[in-house]
Image (cartoon, rainbow, N blue to C red):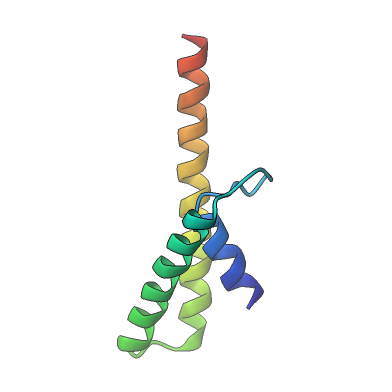
Length: 78
């Protein structure tokens, strides 16, 4: 359950480096994660794919956060 919890929180917008998150963001992250897990079951994939997709979702969320943070820094310097 730990990976699922971390995935939901990160998808909800909380930084992997620490910081603040919101309740609504975490709930929306959990809803998105549940939808992905249901799709995996619907497609008949094995449990291994659940972990693969959770890891990919964390990576995508981290990249999106990093890009957004870099853009904010550039706007602040410009």
